[in-house]
Each structure stands twice: as structure tokens, then as C-alpha cells.
Length: 93
Image 1 (cartoon, rainbow, N blue to C red):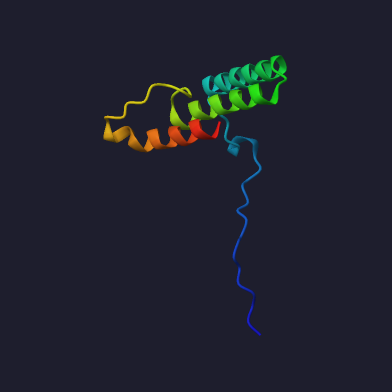
Image 2: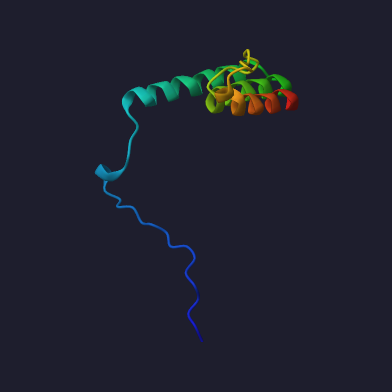
């Protein structure tokens, strides 16, 4: 009988406090302000449609680096992949 193949072996990280990674203070501040903004927007808007738009807009900013509905530059070949992704987002929502 052969031993079972080990497919996954969890990596154990040391539990000492100095080894736990922490974000830079500036990054943490930006993150907290963003979460506060989202919380305020979701608290203010109860409609599922408006909340979906908020999520869509934030995801466009995160993944594409520009607001949803921003003007596309269709002549630059370097922006073609991004334009395709933006077009797909526009059609879905």
C-alpha cells in the first residue's frame, strides 16, 4: 500500500507579534476613510439598485483605475483591454 499523496501542506507562520505584517500608517488611514465612506453611502441609500451602483463604481475604481462611465480613448491600443472590460461592465449594469 502506497502512502497518500500530500496535495496541500499548510504553512505555519510564527506567532510572535513582531512577525505579523502591518500596513503602513498612511495605507491604514486611507483604508479606514474608504470604509467609512462606504458605510455612509450604504446607510444613506437603502435602495438595492443604488447600492449596486455604489459597488459597481467602487469596483471600477479599484480594478480599472477610473470611474465608471468615464470617457474611453478608443484610439490608444494600450487601452484596448481596459476598454473591453469597461464595455462589459457598462452592459451588465
